[in-house]
Length: 423
Image (cartoon, rainbow, N blue to C red; front, side, top):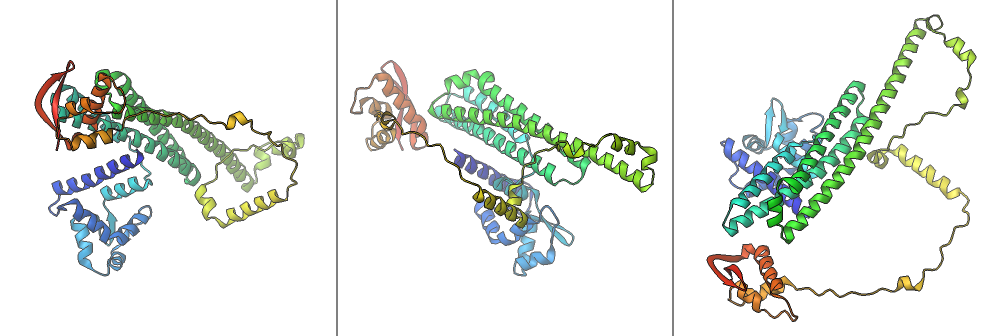
């Protein structure tokens, strides 16, 4: 499922790039093949521009060096909207920058509007499905609904991951106290927005569209809805943990700020030789002397995995910890008892099922219409009429792209069905 979602997302982004420049730019890519060919040819330049995106733009002279000093290649990228010229510097266009960040999962901006857009498209396609009479077009709307549901779940999971990463990076790497506080509060608002969209998505599935999810709930839709519900539920529970993390970080920032203000005030009084005059610090110190006995307030800060991988100091500390653990006296270990023999005995269970792929392959070579073939097919076991009709519906749904749906209808076994042939 994750592979399908990734393919869907990449197709959407590439199609969006292609349509954007075909609609608004005089120099437009004529096909997706041409677009991919240009990206492959200039991958060295685009890689450097992407790596330097947080700091500075790329100098024009350096870009020429990366393109073998061919000015026409740089001008081609500018004319076709892949990069933009900012005086003596070059910058990657935002649409391509966002594409690379989304695919590589390094984007820092959390955009909740995508889920809102997919919710709108989801309701639209459900409405079209319920109003459509043609089976082929109904299947297309059915497929689009499944696609919207998958994208809603995938984008929500991605937003939660990005939110968690941005919160950790903000607290650990932002040097300015006021900026850090504002960023954490804004990220908390993002968390609330994601939680609201999760509730809206679940409400669409559970309450707003009961007719559709009752009449269109085939095997594929049931699997998609089940996966989406599970992913949304996991995302919501992760948001609860993120909320606790934000509160913890905000408390740490407030505590550190109070300590900083006190230290700065004491330093000012000391520098002005007014510490004893403006405060009763000497009397307080004479009255109390339990500092060395007081437990030190500790606030757990999670270590950065990236820092542990790249820091030589962290590597040396890890080696010291490992060597100390090796020198510890190894005491006796509690040995578990023998596993009872009855737990090692396994009972096999044989599941009797029908391979629809084999049924379809036999149908494709038969020349008969689907309903007649399915009802008369030898399944090597006794099947009820209802089960055979169910197989007819499943094959018609799963192999709709390679089947020919006619407008002729017949009635058998009390069921009206279209004549469906293999293409």
